[in-house]
Amino acid sequence: MSRVLCWFSCGAASAVAAKMAVEQYGDLCEIVYCDTLKFEHSDNLRFLNDVERWLGKPVKLLRSEKYSDIYDVFDKTGWLVGPGGARCTTELKKLVRRKYQRDDDIHVFGFTVEETKRTTQLIMGEPDLHCDFILHRNGVSKLDTLHRLADAGIALPAMYRLGYKNNNCIGCVKGQAGYWNKIRVDFPDAFYRMALQERKMNVAINKSYAGDGLRKRVFLDELAPDAGRMDIEPDIECNVLCSVAEEVKPEV
Picture 1 (cartoon, rainbow, N blue to C red):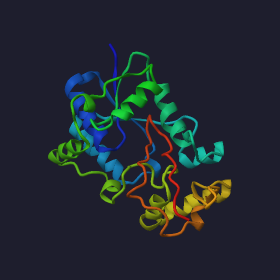
Picture 2 (picture 1 turned 90 degrees about the horizontal axis):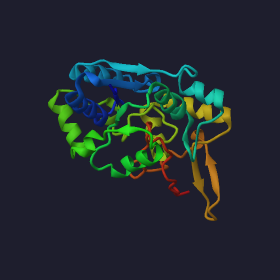
Picture 3 (picture 1 turned 135 degrees about the vertical axis):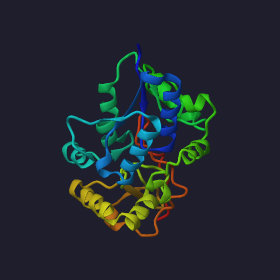
Picture 4 (picture 1 turned 30 degrees about the horizontal axis):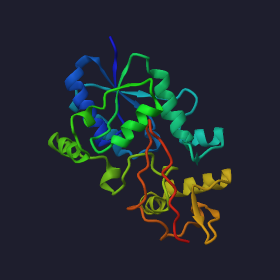
């Protein structure tokens, strides 16, 4: 009989999707998480444990056999981020998932009713996956998922409560200038570690554009403290649809 793999991401939507899947599929469900907890906020482990108790099922942690963490990926591959996405997500999440999955698995992802574009992208990008977009097909919105967690007495992960739109590793390479300036304030150690990594690899996450449209690298250690606006920057993802947000030319 097919397994139902609920891909947990330490986010509200994936938690509620897992809960609904357990209610529908019961013992066929496995709750699985591609583990990048080392560089995530420490509160994510609290959230994971709370969700385990709510589901009545353990979250199975899957790890790369080749890389220990994101910085191990950066050092060994010489890659931070590019137009095709982030190598750390590919190595620590996508390839780990693909190794674990079977052809007849049913995959549950936390895509809400607003995310028709994302469901379409997944269907087109991974046509061999058998997916149950359980939130989307039941008309569950992002706000609904927040209410359901609140009703269960589960506090949102700390990164959301701090005002971030994602719950990725602290200092995600897909973030833009406004995001990184907030990281500099909230998590200076993470900011400066990534700044050192950029210089070590001689690559820069951020860019600026001169009046003639020419692109210039902007290293984190030279990023203006008022650069960017996180509230208008695209969301960044670290999941099956990992991608670099469409480039937005910042003011220079």
